[in-house]
Length: 463
Image (cartoon, rainbow, N blue to C red; front, side):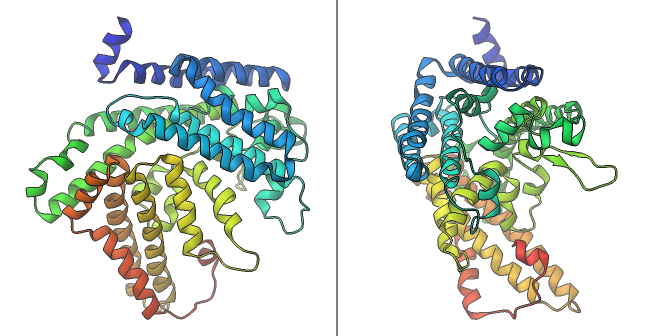
């Protein structure tokens, strides 16, 4: 009865409230983890808390679902090490796709429900990265990329280390995704967590408080905006009577509103990882040096809302998943001696779409994202080719890239929110598919208007 009244008072269902309470509990429970001795006690605690929170949030079935990819990944590493990475990739994604098809979670999420599929998505990435890095441990360092050298595993993690890594204090609920190598170093006090080599570890409390205040602000923004910009409006006949600019503005505000929900969730998970100590990622080069907590960071709100280029979006939105996609999909599709192109980008976005679910809206959104990024790169290349003496032209192109990103991102994300093919195409068609046509036109124009090759600056290399 208490849960019913509490859920009604904040406008969510009881299952969602139960999840939110367990999710918020990851912060104090992660704080307790930092007080435990290194090694086995941390592993046992991480695993036990993860199992308990999963049970309280989703019931017994969730832990049974989580066991499947965890078992498949560990069995692959134990029995088929030379192929354990590719085996775990396809087995893990295969099981996740099966759960997506069976539960069709997107419909439940739209109606205010929740299930364990979201946590299973995060867990699948962790299991795959562990297996791939153990596979990389067989390879010679020569020819490996820096990320492969940094995260490869020479020795098979013990079963309790593996379970602790997968379920660490509920971090599988919403991320962030982190590496087994970092988890082992953290639990054993090695690497950047070694007090002998680096001195005392930084206090996490200021960064944790900042993340919690950010979470409160994001939730307030979402609760205030969502009544004014419901997704149901896209199927309302009055929406289709509006003029072009009003419909385009509504698409922007709908995307802007929905993002605050994700900002809230990721801010809580950031606070949890920071206070545990696992979120620490080193010191800045400034004087005096300041601690960095990048391992816990999953979103840069200012970076998303004021992105100057679509190319930067993966670096500021769902940061750790974007990093995972870059290390385990994008970079591994690049043939030795060749440059990456649109095919690698499209394949990576397709994997991301399948990971999210098999709804048409997801597939269309991530294909749109590939087009959006490719179009933004065209504008950037034109911008870089402008001589320094023509600063006005360069500034116009910079603003054009910003406006282009703002338009196409918020147009595209409608598909991510409404999910169904009919609603996605109806919303895109209501603004004459402007967010699809412009990127395609830019990509085609790049074949005709080929800028000269300027000196390769550091910024150009990063692009």
